[in-house]
Length: 200
Image (cartoon, rainbow, N blue to C red; front, side):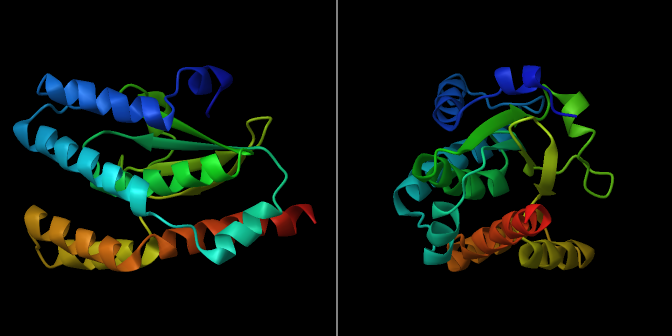
């Protein structure tokens, strides 16, 4: 699935941020779709991540849990610069890896790595972000994505009712603003807690 070679060519969070900024200076974003809409999404996401880098907070439960975590974990995220959900999620993961060094974040661009993306489809779709947790031997532990379960349900229902792309974006942004990354942390803690139970 995900090999050592994939990790070696993956991007760290700060390098990812710099890549997006440099591409935007050229009127571009990452990925195959270079439409004006996607470039604009990239601009919004750069500002969003910049803001969240300063404001995202780990919950007391998250801090307590990972303070006792000793295993090295590779957290791989399949992403692209235009993806709004990824921009909501990466600052939290970066906060985790800088607070708890045993967690290492690796970003893989979807369109440059179809052989990876095609192994992690969501209902047949190449939806991102997709998070894959690996142990130190690169054994897959769990996956997550493309968005928190409550929001995924809301989006699915909205799309079924014919909501526009613009309204979908407003809907998801309002949800993320209200949630303040709490649900994402709860879902990750649940997945990591299950690993503890399996190895206990």
